[in-house]
Length: 221
Image 1 (cartoon, rainbow, N blue to C red):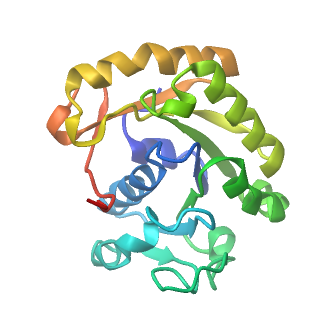
Image 2: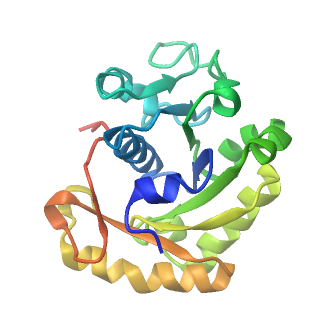
């Protein structure tokens, strides 16, 4: 089990963050990149979310740049043009120095973008992780989460390497909420035959034994 998100990301050139809508993928991706940059590593975040226009890594482009993190964002990100598109510098994911963190859109529809370049991900060295939030209605049951996990694998042509437990209730999260989610994440990991790689918790609700992360994702309300 990894102790930090940066430790997890250092296992492969490319770390793909995938999973259901609302699981907190963007927050995990951005926190991972910031953790790598804080260690002096060259890294970039690739916003591959062609499905959900509300929570995406592109929203954090200026902040990430200030911390030395390069962002690869779709041409029409944060505009009123709603056209699915890949970043112009998409190939930097595979050829750029250092590490690439890919923030993939929710569920299997978003994961389809990975299938287009499956061989490139495999050749460059890729580790894909499923972000699980026990408190999201559609995947609260680990069996339902497993079904989505397998669907993403089929569509992307890639296999998950492990589970990232990000069980939370947003601003209402407490350390007890984080603790409550752990057994469900463990059950999902057992069903999937994958390791529970790391459990994260918000800084204000830190649970000993987890990795504390910042709440960076923008708020709609």
